[in-house]
Structure formats: structure tokens, C-alpha cells
Amino acid sequence: MNDKSIQSKFLLNPDINYLNHGSFGACPKDIFDDYQQWQLRLERDPYQFFLDTGQQELERSKQALANYINCAVEDLIYIPNPTTGINMVVKNLNLQPGDEILTTNQEYGGIDRTWDYYCKQTGAQIIRQEIKFPLSFKEEFLRQFWKGKTDRTKYIFLSQLTSSTGLIFPVKEICARAKQLGITTIIDGAHIPGHIPLDLADLDADIYVGACHKWMLAPKGNSFLYVKKELQPQMDPLIVSWGYDAKEPSESQFQDYHQFNGTVDYAAYLTTPACIKFREDNQWEERSKKCRDLLKHYYPIIAKELESNVICALTDDFLGQFCSVPIKSPDHKKLKSTLYNEYKIEALVTFCGYEMFLRVSFQAYNNEENIEDIINAIKKIKASTNLLS
Image: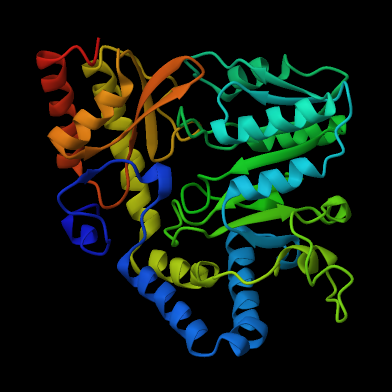
């Protein structure tokens, strides 16, 4: 299922072995064409598009997304990226001195900074519970995570799939227990839509952000924020505009406050139906399964070549379509540039705390040859440099 025929459907440079879908995604030609058609319609009649036809199309697109992730459409808004959504949420939490936010030591660096900023402003404390490797069972993660809970824990913030370590966390189990404890859950699902199945009604998180421009294949700037109805009244907008004290309010203040805050090209939001259709037309679920199977096969091989270890069991509980291997290098920037400039391989060298990782993504445009290429590159770099020592 994963062969060169699917590569031709993407706009990626064919001269580069692209093993870094996890960072910013990649948009197929058909979806990108749909994106540009929406932009063209906007430019041909801006006033009508912004205030009439475009708004109707936006509602149609939101409904398609709501159906895809199983939530009520009125509980969903489009945002340009998950970072925007988390910033809006954290700003509205009314954090107090002594409040604790329980998270892990493996969260996305940009969002870590968001929490640090608001904790300094309010006197709240972020508790980054250490999760040790390797992980063999969900129960190991849960035991480690809940050690960080105290009677001051007011919020839980957690990635459903981590950016740096590539691990899927048992978010459903955490949300269920948090609900029993009266703790609000805020989930960063940037890597989830189109990657692993997402059912928000079943997951039962209080607040959830996700990106459609990564694994769902949308153009850059297509993401969403979901907030349960009972929490929506406390979500003031980052930008106050026409939706506040609206002359013709809709049935949802949440929608009024947040969805239209000035002139912005929201064509990327309108491509969601095209994304869903592309995935259906190209049997993307089957292709994704092939990617996961490839990952399970090659992850230990890559780790062995790097004289390292896998950090979790090779199961769907922990792994999706990208994985991270702990490495040591005296110059991580040079290592990444060497992979790119000398071997034409785009892969991510990243950090989780003080630990360095090589992260490799497996998407349907990748095949066994691509993976063998990075393994051979690792061998040559080890033989000719000190960049992997």
C-alpha cells in the first residue's frame, strides 16, 4: 500500500527523503488545490465571502469535522494552531496561588512555556511528573503519572501523543479518573486527528485541541479547539470583536466570541471535507496501518544501529506513525544538518528535558527504501564522524 505512486500525490521535494511528517505535516496536491480554490473564491468577491457564503461554508466544514471526531458542532471552533487554543484556555483558568497543574516531563516545549508564563503571573505551580523509560504497559504510565497528584491538583494537562518522544499516553483512563476526582482535563491532541482514531464523546476530555494540518493532511493553519458546554462561559476570547455583545447573536456565545475576530484568510479551515474525502478515496486507514507495521519492525533496528534502545513496547498502546530513539551527540544541530545536506534526509533531532532523541516519522509516502536509507546514513555518520557518540 505504501509505494511511490502515493508520493506523486504530494508536493514534497522528491529529492529529499522526508521522514519528518510529525513536525508540520504535508499536504497532498488535491487538498492544496481545494485550498487555493477557496482562496480564489474569497478574492473574487471578498465581502460576500467573508460575511455570507464563506460563513456558510465554514459551518459546513465544522460539521464535517465534528462528525469526524464525534462531538457537537457548537462545542468546536477552528483555530490556526493548537498553541493558540492552549493559550486562550490557560489565560481563562483563573489560576490562584497554590493551584497545581499536573502534567508530564514530556510535553511540547512551546506549551511548557505557556504554562510557565501564567504560573509566574498567578503563583500557580506546574508539576511535571517524570515518566521513566521503557514503558511496557499502560498501567506503568498511570502509576507514575498519578504519583504527582495532590489535594492541590486543579487541572491535568497532557499530550495524547507526545512530540518529542512519540509516545501515545492513556488519556481516556486519565480523563475518567480525573472526572471522579473533580479535576479538569486539558488535552493536547496536536498529533491525533488522522493519526489514531479520535472520538471526543468517548474520550470525555473537558478541553481538547487538535491539528488537522499534521496527520489529517490539511494545509497549514487548520486546527481546532473543543470545550465542553459547561466550561464555555469562562472562555473569554483572546481577541474581542464583533461577536461580543453581538447585534444578531447565534445560539452559541462560544461561537460568537471566538470564530470571527477580524479579517483572516480562513481558507485552510474550509479544506476539512476535502481532507476526509482524500483519505477515503486513497484508503488512508489501510496505508496508516502499513506505516504502523513498518514502524514496529524498524524501530528496534534503528535503535540497535544507534546503539540505543526503544523506549516502549512495540504495541498500538504506545506507538503510532513516529518513534524516537535516545541518542548522544556533541552537536545536535550539525547532526541534523549532516543528515539533510549530505544524505538528503529530513528527520528530527529533538530534546525531552536534557535527553536527546532522533525522531523518525512514517507516512504513506514513505517505504522500506526510505527507512533503509536512514539506517545506512547512520552507519556512515558513525564511521566517519563523532556526531553519534
